[in-house]
Amino acid sequence: MYRPKSTVEQWRIFQAVVDSGGYAQAAETLSKSQSSLNHAVAKLQQGLGVALLEVKGRKAYLTPEGEVFLRRSRKLTQDMKDLELLADVLASGWEPILRIVVEASLPRQPLYHALADFAGRSRGCRIHLVEAQPTGCQAVVSKQAADLVFACRAFTGITSLPLATTVYVPVCAPEHPLAQLEEVTAHELEPELELILADGNEQEEGWERAEQRWIINHLHDTLSLLRRGIGFAWLPLEVVAPLIDSGLLTQLPMANQALRKRFTHLILPRATPPGPAASLLLTMIRHHYSDHEGSLPAS
View (cartoon, rainbow, N blue to C red):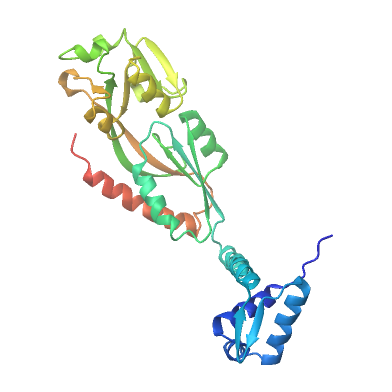
């Protein structure tokens, strides 16, 4: 069985001697006797079988081998410090993991901005970000299997916050026959192939649907098929706007400027109140969704 030949304290003393320029200076910095420092470094070198320092006059100098070990030892002591800080963080109730589920059809730029802010203040909290279909979100909520769920619908008896309104527009490839029309009515959409970003059980909140339907699980697949001239789809305007501007997709000129809207609800499935990490992230999410809503043009 492997047995360490050194201790973290020995490496800490070794670093202090190097950083202070000698044993006497390091002894003063660490509030230890010079002889104890000499003994610790000597024992470290003896255990490794490698000379790390050489003393010239009153100063200690790194050997070439010592330079290599110094770099590696700094990571070791920093990792130890991080471990102990993590213990303090977890003891204070800070969550080690936050699980976030987002419904596939919802845009999520404000969430990304919130996560970017959270990253710098996460204190070691890990994020699990998962995309799901509507029934998947419902299952997660019923099982309380996530900390935060972004969905198009609220759930009875479950805490939810309305975050934003998303405008959906019909789009297709520029060469699609629908794109050649000066005006498109719901009647003209009925016989066309519609790509639906859902799982087949979702009723799309009463939206009228075309007779031909393909159910697509991921936004990326929907966009890829559309760009190849396959069908049309109702997608979030903020998602498809860059593709429309670049000419890769065309927004269909609907009669009476017919648009569809969905709300983004932030669901808190847990029966217990959110912990400190989740509460911090919630504050950031509400801030960014509020800013995002205010920056969108009126539809």
